[in-house]
Amino acid sequence: MAKRNTRIAIEPLTHVTRGGQPYHRTPEVEAQIASALRLRPAALVLRTKVRDRNAAEFLKEECLVYFIRMYSQAADLDTVNALAHVLLRRCALWTTSRFRALGLHRDEAVKAYQDLVGDTVDAVIDPESDRGDFFQVRFWLALRSRLLNVYDKWVRANKHDEQYDSLTDVAGHSRSDASDDPTGRERLEERTGSEEDLAMDAERRMVIQEALFAIRDERHREAFVLRYFEGWPLEADDPNEACLSRHFGVSIKTVYNWLQAAETDLATWRELKGGR
Amino acid sequence: MKHTTIGDLTMASERTILDDILEAYVASEAGPSRTTLTEWVRRYPEYQQQLTEFTARWGMLRWLPNKPDDKEIDEEMLVLRGMSTVQSVLFRQRRMSDQMRAQDRTVEQHSTPVHFIPIEVERPIAGLLSEGKRLSLTADDLADRVGVSDGILRKLDRRLINPTSIPALIIRDLGHVLGRDVGQITAYAQLAPRFATGAQHRANQAPTLPAVQEDFFDAVRHDLTLSEESRARLLSLAPPQERSE
Image (cartoon, rainbow over all chains, first blue to last red; front, side, top):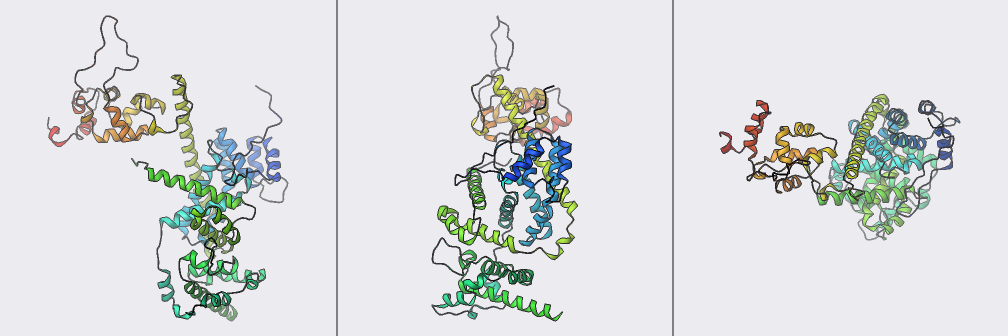
């Protein structure tokens, strides 16, 4: 039997982004991989049980992905399963709750989560490609990105082409609430918050975040978040610039009405909260 | 069997490009936001809508709080379901690499200077039995899966059966098991009959092939190795006017 090599090289990442940037793991991840490479599979699995992120023995998710790929290529499926189990335990609840927050029902969210697991593992262990490399660079960003891809497929598969305008009418916010004059656009921009307002203190944002579910209509909520938390304008002259009316495919007045409706929901919520 | 169309391939390729762009966007130093979006739309104007939707959802994902009843979701159930998905992916990947290895072995055996056989649709079928062998299927395995006897399979392999008499279901099942298009199996069946691979012939006797290809249903009727049940099932595939014969 050959003598065990004491220095095992870390497999380099090979993926290069569309912008020509090669991927690199962080030094911290590289160090964790290097320290764990010496371990036998059973010891490695034991080490992955450490859940305290501040502990010296803790292995980051990027590191787990590296070893899942490595042991998959070595056809050691027991170790792959054990590592995948640890990884799932770290992200299953977060993933499902994010799908739920985006609007999927509970059963849908669980199925979407399974799709995401399949999509991720498929990319990570594919021996013929490096399409899962990003998971070894920034695991949570990669997961978030794939989550949105899976969500997009769900939305496309279950498209509910509702008429935004008619919905706002049903909700009791007619278009005539907004100004009809040609300068209405500037006024609406002013009325929904200046740049200073958008940079408002984080504390207020936190309070509003708590109240987000008080905004009953999902589109109103999305418009509200994009406007006040992400700083999207109602409308933009530059066709390349993102703006709410173009994003939703509705008039600036409709967006304004949605924001007003969201404010009304929030005011009701505040009253109820204050009355408790 | 579902056929992959050019439209499917174009959509898949488009999706891959988009996924690449979105991943690069996420991996960029500033990350997705309304301000960085403008620059990315300038770079990839054809994906403006997708980039914008992605950015909006990225922002939503950051801000939207968990639903209050999320606490009721059973973590153990999620992990188990996730593991079940992992098993499926591992199984699929393992099967694919086995097939790749089988392909490589066939290439080595024939000493063909081909290094990679990526697209099944472009590689002609050398033989039904050899196709099965590439997938680690013995003649018995293949016959079982298609529901014919070993003898009939070998006749199909040597194209001793009249192609117009072969039921569409048998063509479809052969294609399905061998991972081939129905059109490719049909085209193979329409070629001239051939001798069995590795057949030995006496030096003083020229090898001959039957002057007329046999009808598929005649072959079924005369095959002594078929069970009555299999024979009845195969004969039920005959056009109505031939069933009474």
